[in-house]
Amino acid sequence: MNRPLILNPAPHRLPAEALVTVNRAIAEIRRGGMICLTIEGQPAALMLAAEATTDSCLQRLSEISDGAPRLAMSVRRAEALGLSAEGKVVLVESAGEALTAPLAARVADPLAPGRPIGGLSVVATPAPLWAEAAVALVKHARLLPVALTSPASQLPAGMLAVDGQAVLDHAKQSALALRRVAEARVPLADAEECRVVAFRPADGGIEHLALVIGQPDREAPVLARLHSECFTGDLLGSLRCDCGDQLKGAIAAIAQAGGGVLLYLAQEGRGIGLVNKLRAYNLQDDGLDTLDANLQLGFDDDERLYLPAVEMLRLLGIGQVRLMTNNPAKVEGLTRYGVAVTERVPHIFPANDHNRRYLSTKAARSGHLF
Image 1 (cartoon, one colour):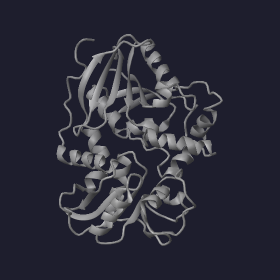
Image 2 (image 1 turned 135 degrees about the vertical axis):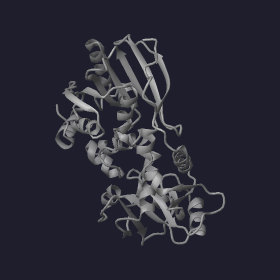
Image 3 (image 1 turned 90 degrees about the vertical axis):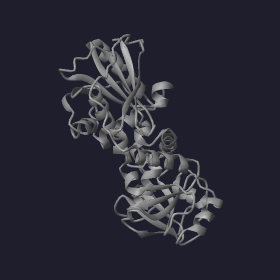
Image 4 (image 1 turned 45 degrees about the horizontal axis):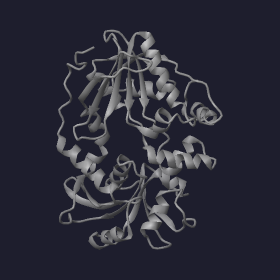
């Protein structure tokens, strides 16, 4: 167990420039800054994240753009606002009160204080590619999926420009750019023979982890678990979900089987991030189930991607697995990219009074097999 786990194959070689530029754009909009989206090398739109903007930023957007700012939002959020929409993204304008930063925040966040929102209308459905890229970018930043946008004919001096197609391709390219950056022996209470391997994309983005337990035989199907990080369940022991039980149970089961791997994926809250998961919890306390809460926020019911897991398995030299899961989407997510799932191993734990509705929703509406 002292030898490196990853000898071959090498990481995919991808141009890092586009990845890095998108990562810079993510940081810029998270702090309330403005960026320019380009399409085929030409400026197309200026954008701000609705959640993070201020009136002064919105005023500057109005002054340097070619048209009045509008709201690009996911079709899920548009539907939650009662707007008829098609496609993935729509452009919306306010025909009622003037578009201000507080109004944009209320449009983006169903928990934001303020009177009911009226006077919104869809002006483009499906939206242009730059609007789709704007919403994708705020999702990558784990912000609410609404952006303030306005067309641009030229790039303002000193402003960061990012290619819209690179934004749309970012999740896939980031997964393919994963590489091993660290590895160490980490004895666990239920699996003393364990090594933790860290993977980071070429742009320096969020790391994913692999727990390699025991001595898995990579010539045979490896017992494996894909586990999306859950701060509340895994670390705090929250009773609202079964994630902590699943994590501990998988580690113990893999150790008892003699070896396997648990991939700990940085996809909190089914891919919407911790802050948005906490927002969804508030909506659940108001009566929505876990799926409808995500939709009300403007996200799909499950935003997770499984290509990072596929690439991690490839770098670990694992091509076939016995997958510990109750979720058929995980089986499909691996097989789509060439990992052979030879068996689905049920991974079920008792419900409690706090997560009973959560588990029944997963079974009834997301197809989980309990």
